[in-house]
Length: 132
Length: 408
Image 1 (cartoon, rainbow over the protein chains, first blue to last red):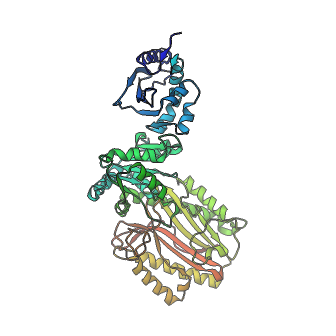
Image 2 (image 1 turned 45 degrees about the horizontal axis):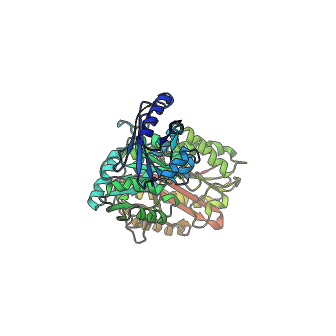
Image 3 (image 1 turned 45 degrees about the vertical axis):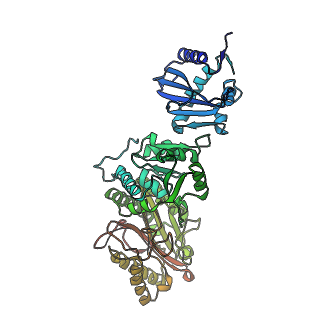
């Protein structure tokens, strides 16, 4: 099975492909939003971010960023290892948030309403064979 | 934004954007970059929603404010408020979402290079839910905004909210109409011996039911909602606070009924008194003293008079009638939209955060005419409360329930 280096351009490309294929607008509740996941302390010491843009339930963008980050409705920040543990299903995202290992910036009421949609997105990402 | 946003033709309309602009103008004059309100009175006055949980409002130098409340109530506050859901945020126990992170995140963009002045609300109050910023909150905010100067600025809202606008006054008028319905319900229940077997809590509850049927949102007072006292509880020494108890009403005793209704954050607050027959001549003497005094008090309020001058005039009458010893000193307390319940006027008196006895009333101010007569040794007390609007020539009494001490 082909594996992808986590947060590599190839991984992002595969993420976009799977998200578009697996998540229908109905499953995504025709959501229009943007989310930035900021990975601090990556294995090479850098900080990286992945930006997801969803328009009317269609995942239109999965892009990698370093340095200056784009604006997004929600920004989720955590150490690379925390995200990796969530992707490996070792840690629940909710537990990471509640314990302060992960921070969320954005409207909490909206975020809670969108949590099931984000869970679906994370479930698809977790299917990507990745090297962390 | 709420579907029930009030159109301008509505008698209860309040121009909240204009209130915010007035705060921003004052901020500009005082060199305040961003205002962080935390008092319940400030939240009601700016957000137009009841905020029962610890809440805040961040007022930027321009544009809309953002309210912040406990996440479990944020959607409801947004629904009630004139602000949309992007300007009513919730906080909760999550990374980046606890109070200090949310507040500092809202304040920081208005501080150039992290430097600037943040107006906060601090002080002390007799009123428990006042909502001043706590020392812990202050320290955490200062740590999150290390180069900012946090300065006490509650005078801005206090000054701006002193003179009531027409929408606010109409909300108070409506709340008082509802209180009158509550009083009628109590009278209908207790008349002709109907009080027998009833308890104070039951009186409070049946009044609450009638007022809620008439549209009251809740019996807003933190003193236990509707304050009902009977017998010796009416006359507790120097007392003026009587949450209802399980005490049964009894013949030959006084009954004090102090009702509270809320309509769109406007507050009704009216106390009426009864003598559950047979009344004694001495009880009637106390009752007559009290009614005379209340009547005189209401005729004395007008623009230009101060609490101390009013007290002098009334106490003279009490001395002449030889009942001064039964009067609890003080004839009023402040009132405004929900959360603004105690001090009258500004914080400019000889005792910080108490009413300035020399505060000169202006037309357009509102207060609660509040008088308590207590004779503990005879187990009798009487209370009068009524919201009044100060006018140039006198005052408008909001509750129209007839003044008197009724014998049942």
